[in-house]
Length: 308
Ligand code: FAD
Image (cartoon, rainbow, N blue to C red; front, side):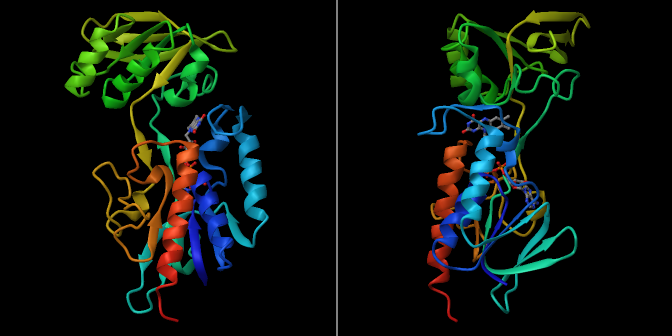
């Protein structure tokens, strides 16, 4: 039994575990894969106070920092259910291997994953031109042509953001209409280095073996195939929270994000959440860490108000 159990080993989970352990309470951390999305990241240049680092290096630093404290790390373990026992007030976390961990408080920090295009070349050129985060990787394409895949709010926001940095942005939308808000579309249409193409189905990412050089799409009306020369492709077709296993037990938004208040509290007493899996508007490493620290302090406040 723990006082404090974190589910998730990304930046949010690591920060929560460190903050809890520093309070001297018994702390556990269960993670499917320690490091989370950071493990899949190449260059990181916006982790404030560290000018430049790489994902695997930051993951190693995170793990070293967590291991400096008395935290019971259970890596390669996936949670399949989280429920509060109304009689004991304990929160039970069931793992896929059948084990049940009980804790007085739990922080859910299971993160999110970008929806992928699932076309040839996407995996091969991930981090070599194929990108998912304009705030992170936009500056790497300064003065070069790029594409944004997806004409929803995040796609059009990304196009407007990138237009100020890169040479030209081509937005490719699968549908015949753009789902983005009118005000964003007006802004995008006012910028002369954004081209929006509708009814465009991306079919292939093409590169020279080292980096992306172009993208192929099919015009869904004419059936014709087209090539766009570019240096980068920002995929903006959705960020999916890893919260499927919580459905029905914890209040989620219609996008599946865990709803939290400003102390990281969820709809279930004793259960807190932090990072990309929550309804926080912006998803970044530094924000996830702050959110993890915040949820841990919220949980500590909760614990000192419990009897026994
Ligand atoms: P995650 O990092 O997603 O970690 C989630 C953790 O939960 C993982 O350990 C995972 O294994 C675990 N988990 C999930 N489900 C379960 C389960 N059921 N049971 C147990 N464990 C589970 N941000 C920046 O600030 N700068 C950048 O340069 C940057 N570049 C990026 C590049 C890429 C390619 C990607 C994908 C993201 C990038 N980001 C960047 C975003 C950043 O990585 C995330 O905002 C951040 O990692 C979120 O942290 P988190 O702890 O909330 O979730």
